[in-house]
Length: 270
Image (tube, rainbow, N blue to C red; front, side, top):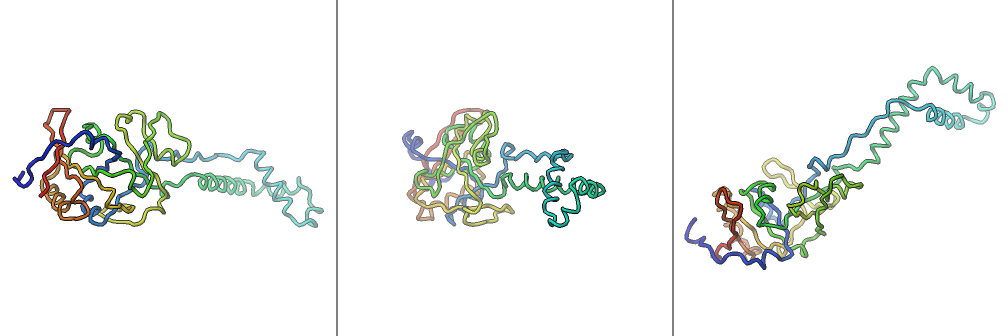
């Protein structure tokens, strides 16, 4: 570390307890900061997957008869006067297997149409405790950067993640939830329709859905203790060169391998 990056005072607890949420990011943080966007994700966690629609194997007799009754009443009145319902059923008997197959396919399509479409939804999970080593590891490790965001200035509502042992009833609630075993992460989240994302950006072959990030919402960034030196230098240079972020806090995480505790310190402004 160069002398120009000498450490200043240890980050005060009052800063850590402000209404701030943190979004862990990798190398994509640099182009995102330059463009002023935040990524939102397509549903990709196991508990966000929908159960497969159970396919009905056969058509119950009552369902078949109800269908045929409707078809019989669609006949012209003159034809019905010449053909009883029992005769109509008898004539259709040779095609019953095709009729039942069509009924099964129609029912399958109706059931699928009533299911939520994950492709139409986006979500993002944030963190609220930057001094949790387990949260850092769960969020991708110590080589990432945690972007600190003012919840009140974000262009969407952030809510607490609901930790539960069973999947919630609605799909929106499912996206805003996580398994009970992850409750110690104290995550927050945003859930939105895919149509509410403003832009698509491809970074390192990955397509990201983006929402606008007001510069005023950026409170700072914490550089992970194991960040690649080249990436670290690029991030620091980008941060210090951009007038939108110069007054926000640039912070460094310090961690000794084997320890559970670590400290976060301010990097001196140049």
